[in-house]
Length: 261
Ligand SMILES: NC(=O)c1ccc[n+]([C@@H]2O[C@H](COP(=O)([O-])OP(=O)(O)OC[C@H]3O[C@@H](n4cnc5c(N)ncnc54)[C@H](OP(=O)(O)O)[C@@H]3O)[C@@H](O)[C@H]2O)c1
Image 1 (cartoon, protein in one colour):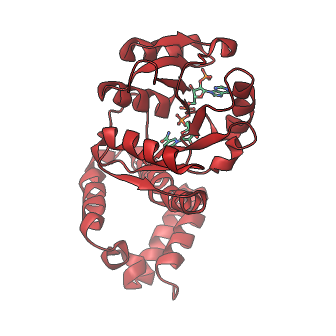
Image 2 (cartoon, rainbow, N blue to C red):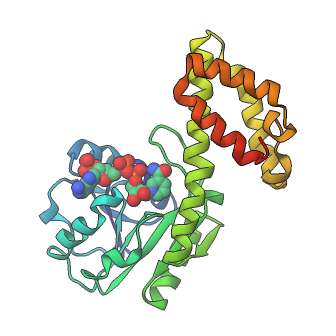
């Protein structure tokens, strides 16, 4: 990308932070970073040689790609605000798995998606090489442009439409958000009993390692899979006494694994 073909990053949270850093590392010029809190914009800008701003009206009109890495609930409103600041012909994309690209359609002629399908947290480094980058746009030339940009940061770039992306996002919530919440339950139980959560970590690691090369359906083990009602009753007795809020989750998960229990 030439200087005049630079990226304007709107949002310096979990995704904005990691995506901005990686694009910069691969030679993409990030001209400006916008965040409502200037400290957030500055924190990222310093790392990627960008100009920080918290003034929406000061957002540059010169960018050739505007990336909205902001909460789903505000994408539409921010796009509307942005359309009053930059020309309607600019290419504007957002980074969400859940929100359709068409939320940008009322405000911009050229719009699309640049969705990195991974979990991002500031403070935890990520390796972009294999992160699926799901791209889309209303125009073929921009789909090609976004695919090319994606390939600068990852070997795993996909053209995924709104419908497919929304479905992928449902599955992603199960495999990441819900599994992480189940790990949290494990942590709470061990904490309460003064046991180390670390003892469970090799099990967590093996659970993930196994499903990389095998179907998770085939890899299922445990009392529910074996139909071991005595163990399940003992677990439920413990949970009802100590963690009644987790007993319901235990029952639902057990029945989802084995309908006969
Ligand atoms: N985190 C993930 O693992 C992940 C993965 C893939 C995709 N995504 C998607 O990426 C997007 C951003 O997620 P995130 O996790 O990076 O969120 P986040 O960490 O909460 O960061 C959101 C950013 O948007 C700014 N912001 C919040 N409200 C705003 C508003 N009303 N107007 C303008 N800016 C606002 C925030 O900073 P200020 O408060 O300073 O404005 C912050 O810079 C979401 O659409 C999400 O679905 C997230």
